Image (spheres, rainbow, N blue to C red):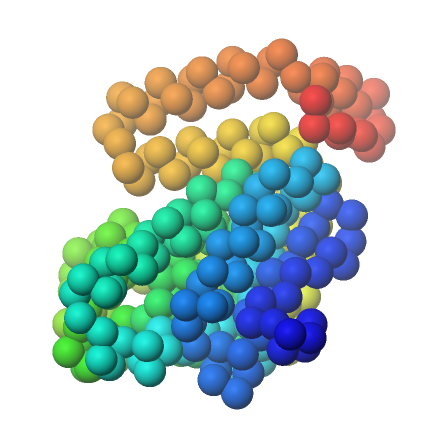
Length: 260
């Protein structure tokens, strides 16, 4: 398989930044099993790469990912679907320690929206369409569409999106808290890259601790979250980057963070 035919491409455009690009333009970047495995492989490798401090996840101008590839589902039975163990593939993405910025253009539907919600920041183009349309083909979201979505926008918006199956605009998605920022279509990737570049220039121990602590806020009690936040905060005082950052601030110079 040539690089142009690979379902997922990994690029390293700048120091500290990786771009993971879904590459099935003829299928609107629909998520077949080969693409899901390739995404898991890409993120597993990046998670172990100490040089990478931020990741941009994207598709193309027409679609971030238009959903699951229904050709692989139409004749599937429950046992076959269970044996695919897709949750392990998704776990490789959601468990990535580095901050992930999703650059969403065009369609982010079904599994595509669920994938975007595994990122930590979502930048969407003005004409992007986001939604969970699974109910319209007789199923329901199965990779976070009832869970991450509810945590992001609350019960009533999540019920509307999942029960009606109708996509919403990027502007509405921003208004209900589903995306971080809406920008002109032609600025989506550039904006995501700027964010990634900013993150990559910050101390990685601190940015990864922030990510872990914020995710804990979604999954645990307030007290357990505060305990994790407190311990992470305290631990960062052992890092060289803490000393460098504070000293540079006091000396009015630009810090140089090493990840130590």
